[in-house]
Image (cartoon, rainbow, N blue to C red):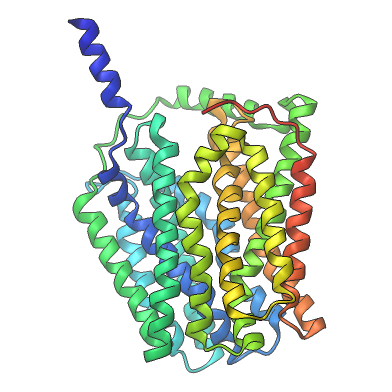
Length: 418
């Protein structure tokens, strides 16, 4: 009887509570919706005041710069916070509603000064609650389910992007930018309300003694340094991190400037230009979970290489095909190949380190991906200013993905089966 009871307990622990995970994911959903609208329309809003694409690209990196600087700070503060609402929820309850109000006013600013003031405060506010909302999932999910839960949350983020591009684009065409930003603000408020009503943080567990914590910190510090890795693993990690940097350079440039390209080069309305990206997002969402299964069968490295080769093959024809139907089809394929790359990249980094080093290796991943998000819009903005042609976006992205392919091809990682 005891063996039967143990077996039942094991089976129960093997199940992920999908309903609870979806509720936790409402915060990710709202955040992804706002960032998709922000990245699609703010460059066009800035274009009303600024002629230089390089300057626009620089402004569009503020969120990433703030993320690198402030996210670790507020994530650490939330670890130490103890309130009756929990340790993460106070940051979300205060910063997220403030961000929703600021977001509503972005397209209504009459001068560049007031626009920049709102944009800077909005970006700071988003960096306040982004780390705590990310921490909610591992806080409330058993560690053996983190990968599956992360897949669910990525799926919700992808759905949010589709809504932003399709519904946001239609609203922009019919009622203007302000209505689109208003929709985003309302969704944010509803998401925070849902999170607060249905997701309860557990009572804070007792913390380690300071001596134990100090010893753990020392152990973590010893494990996290590059010099403690064997030479081959260190080289593999560096090549992989540079591959991540390069493919996010390509992706971020597309995400930031595609809408402007479609308006300038294809003559589309702003809303219709934004809606084009929905084809990419729909495909990404559809293949987010299958990409994980594909990697289980053939390996993460091989899956990423296929994705990089495929996405290069997608972007090269766009230079020569200015046909909307062909562009939609290519973007559908692009979303599939991006899923192969994006879904499998973080697990590939994490498997180099030990279980006790997951936080450190996650930090490596986000440092290189955020750095690309800061560097890439500025660099492409300069290239566009020199060429005076937004179509060079696809040459730039193709080169970035090719460099990523070259980097990951130099790795020789030994993968473990899921």
